[in-house]
Image (tube, rainbow, N blue to C red; front, side):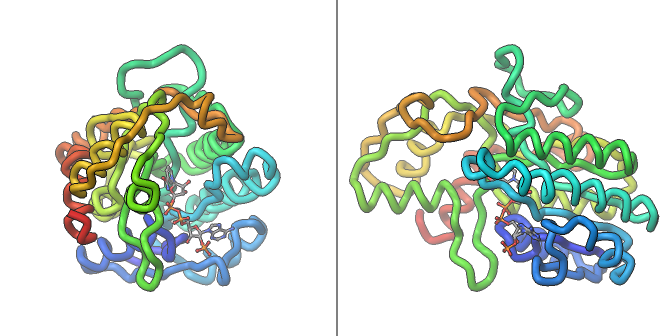
Length: 290
Ligand SMILES: NC(=O)c1ccc[n+]([C@@H]2O[C@H](COP(=O)([O-])OP(=O)(O)OC[C@H]3O[C@@H](n4cnc5c(N)ncnc54)[C@H](OP(=O)(O)O)[C@@H]3O)[C@@H](O)[C@H]2O)c1
């Protein structure tokens, strides 16, 4: 299968490229920003015609949550208009689009305490989440056979030649530099390892699964504070981790108090996703931190 992979140099894209190579049998065409810049949605139709893929995997996106508050036009071009053009290109070519989205399409509306189902209505709280929700909705409308893969709070090895940059690495660096941490304790989410998402993507791309929403997240949930506590504990660091509120942290963009995703639709196809604790332990061990 010929697969156009957008964002192949990113944290998730590079893990997906590796998983597809391990799975074998695919001709993966990386589509870097220099070949196709999603800030220009008009370039997409021609680029996809040239590649003529059987499947398009889009991991590229504008996901600087705080910066996006001041750059709604950029978020709209990259996360909405370009996603619509990718869906249209996939529909024309009879290719399947697997588009990566986010738990931040949720978080508004009534308070939630149970994992959010695949077909729950989007209720974003910030510009980034709104742009992703709009892109998802257009992709579903234009290309119903496509799959929206919502991921969350990603951690994974960096692309070749790029050091890993994620919450786990930042927590370990700050713990060592500062000897104490203050971490938001009132946002609960689904920490997710890119290696597990990538195995799911490699399985899904080869299957004739129904189009729609899938939650490609590790099982279980925790607050950012609880996640940081487990990271320092498993890394063997004796560092106090104090919980603080979102109000104290005062980030420019609002974030969900609860964005835990239920992943039962994916589990019905490929079995249960590993827990985040298991994924974290594997990541720390493979990165040489534990
Ligand atoms: N990271 C998370 O915790 C998280 C959580 C939920 C959802 N997601 C979603 O998961 C996806 C992948 O995230 P990630 O952590 O792998 O991000 P990442 O490491 O920043 O990678 C993003 C990739 O997108 C490319 N890209 C960005 N803007 C582009 C543009 N205008 N044109 C073409 N390519 C562009 C980047 O290219 P360059 O290398 O050239 O910049 C990079 O290869 C995103 O869609 C994001 O919304 C991420």
